[in-house]
Length: 211
Image (tube, rainbow, N blue to C red; front, side):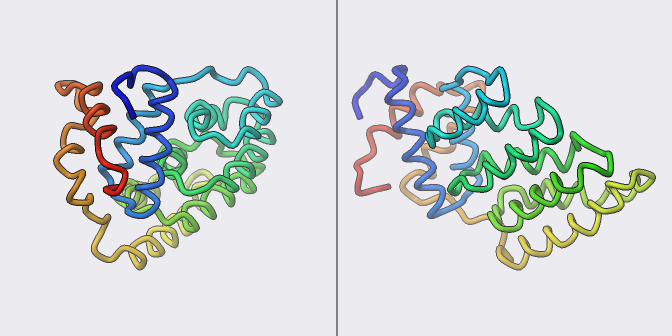
């Protein structure tokens, strides 16, 4: 892959490679690494809903970070449409991480938000990412405190069902990282004391047959 990992093309290629690896082994370490690479790539924030949809139409993993960050930046109707588009995306841990945060910090609480929430929980169950199980379990412990809000009364059973689906699919919890990347992923981008550029270089130097 070369050594110029600060160049956008190399980071984008590395992101694609990491997502492909994660789809085969959805371990927490790879999910965190993907998030770190995505943040390094960055990207422009969509200004309008049309802009959001046009960027989504490119079907490129490197543009999806800013799209996920702005799902709820417009109207509720726009957020629902964006969720419908996100539901067509392939496996990507950034999607489930974003949806889990919606459950923890609900962006919408009115009765008109039910279609949005149906999409959120439908995707969490369909994608079945073990990395978000702990977050959802912790939220399930406290959501009863918010039952004065109608949406929370509906979210409670949906959340319980989602946790059950994930626990059934992953009774032993998230899988371990593959042996050939475990040591490298111990130096995650999210650890500020580590050198993210060096981590990217090490991963980029891995032979293709070790993916």
